[in-house]
Image: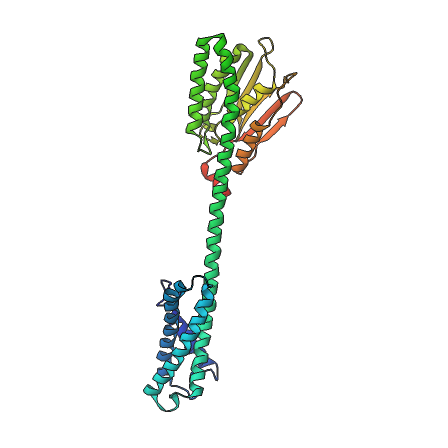
Length: 342
């Protein structure tokens, strides 16, 4: 506190307050005899500055020497010694200047010492408040930094969940296509490479525009068309004004993959996945055509989406009806809407 940029103003204000305090409080004085006001005022101002800058010198030169001791304890104990010496010098000086009843006596020394101790105690109390407030602010800042690092680590963890989940399924399909049709397998591989490039480019992004996500989704739908031909179809109806809104990357791919995983579909009984916007929501739905035998669900797909929206202080809605399975994803208006979590 004593190194504050206003260190030349605060002691003056404190001296002014102390001067009026002595005038108002009867018996509160520096000497046994009353000192004239025109002499008392400059003396009080000088002493206030001396007390402040004595503490300033301690803060600047003494505290670095005692790093293992609490700085407030060092500050106060060191100032106690300096203030005692300052009181002695003050009384000797006033005795030389004013003489008579203002000379160095035990009573004059104790009165001056008591006044300087009160000023010093007040300053050290304010300094303690300043110190703890500063430490509290630093701790809050550290907590916010840790919170941010934790949030970023969570996002990175969610992203690493996404890639294996996606590629294990599609590499298996590619392996089958290679044995059936080399040209189709090559086309499939090109689409898969394009999708992987998209995922790499958006790995560090929390949000992207719906327009960008749709471009990725169309590549993924082409991928599925190669695998399933006419058995699987898509109906996409997106309002133009919704395309500039934001969603986490690759969530649509996860929802479509989820529909493919849990439902049967053939050319005679195709599955149609509908993707459309309604207000501030993007809705992905499909009729329920549950497979008789399906691999055990890990829950990674929907859990991943739910966690990523929770990371953004939003939540998804899941409707698991008798005939329809539907997921509603919030469309985020601007990136600034998500910063409150940090």
